[in-house]
Image 1 (cartoon, rainbow, N blue to C red):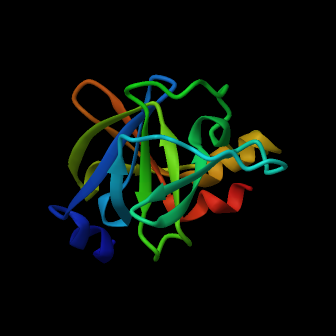
Image 2: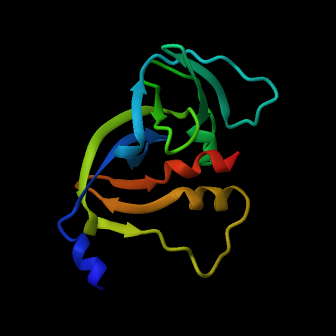
Amino acid sequence: MESEKLRIGEKRQFCSFYVADHLFGVDILDVKEIKDEVSLTIVYHAPREVRGFVNIRGHVYLVLDLRLILGFDSREVDDISRVVLFKQKVGESFGVLVDRIGDMVEVDESQIEARRPDENTSPSGMEQRKSDLSMGICKLKNELLIILDAAKFLDTL
């Protein structure tokens, strides 16, 4: 109870993005940068979720297809596709491909509802992987923000 009191009024910021028309977010402190130039080098014989490599100012990053990780169908890269690159503390030189970038979202810690596993079903396979990525949900004015744990993205491979 006491730790809950400390959280009231504490603000958290999330980098938000859309994947298959769903709003997702990751802690803004985990994000290194967002790239609009998405020219990927294909990696043959890699898992389906690996979209390729991208070279940013001489540094090579592995790019994962977040659509596939979350269980949606892959799609072609277009003008609004973006790559969200993460800091070293999250994982070794990687980023995720998203459909389009959203805004920076700031919410009060008390607005975030913790993810609760469904007690009636035990997920398996892809459903388990997707549920493991979710840290919580936040009801915004017009949308639902699903908060993801970026540090777990590489674990899905």
